[in-house]
Length: 233
Ligand SMILES: [Zn+2]
Image 1 (cartoon, rainbow, N blue to C red):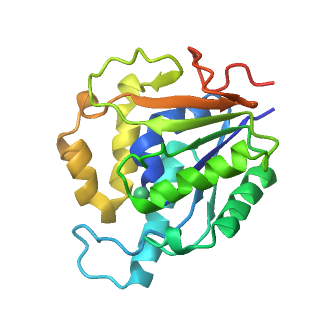
Image 2: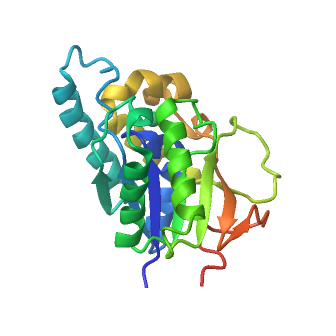
Image 3: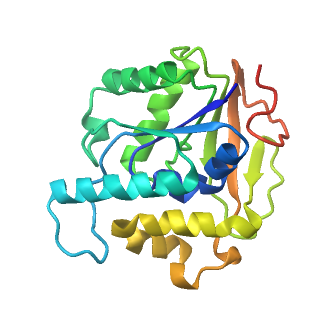
């Protein structure tokens, strides 16, 4: 049986920034990574692509996301098409209902989303964090057994915190570089975090860290795990 893992994010590229190694590993090990992205990401900048209308940028980012998904092994993407930068204004019950529907439709067993600070503090990220918590911890998605937040560490930081799973792709770091490069319109923010992708090497990419915050009703189990599939029933 293929294990379905749901990644729930706000914008095209959030999944690549924080979860490329994990997603590729899940796909390579026979799991099924599935993505929900809440907005088209079309209120932002266009990198070096020049002026674009919001409609043009939405279309471009949808293509970029599909390219990154193909590189990472994401099997399916749900696009909610909610307002970019405006998730706080959305009816939170409707957002939660969409997330619950996504999780139930795909019978998702493991969920990965933003931590409480949204990684970058982006308001849309924080809205997604709370919506996912509400659905999973509120029992609206009974197939879900585990919830993880993707944590951000500086390159080279030792990971010794219990409950944090650290994923490194070693020689396959090029997968993350290529998936980042697919998000061409976001190249300026990518360069701010990862540097010039043309110069990138293995040391440009920190291990990805995932904090297990909930497992079948147990909050903060603080387990040392080998993979996100450990102890699924
Ligand atoms: Zn984002």
